[in-house]
Length: 114
Ligand SMILES: [Zn+2]
Image (cartoon, rainbow, N blue to C red; front, side, top):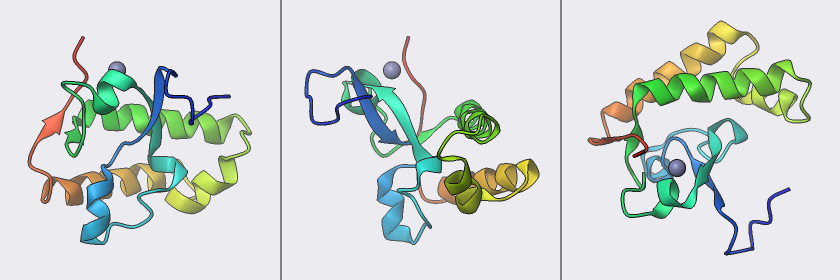
């Protein structure tokens, strides 16, 4: 369990699709499907993600993370299915549509630095 109020914690919870998209009417940006654990450096460090769009290879990682939780009988399984679709194909389309729509608004992409 991560204590989100502990500033010394080295893990942040971050939006994969940045929160700024909420202004453009993107649906359910705060949904668990879009929340990922990120190190402090990635979330708000010098070369952090901020309002940039993660590169496309990271979208596949988000998809795999969500599929893993759905397949593992995780308590969030039902929530994820309700938010993103009841088959893997629908969920993949959901993420791809979201990504393509985001690209028309967010100019810069981002990837973690090593
Ligand atoms: Zn990182």
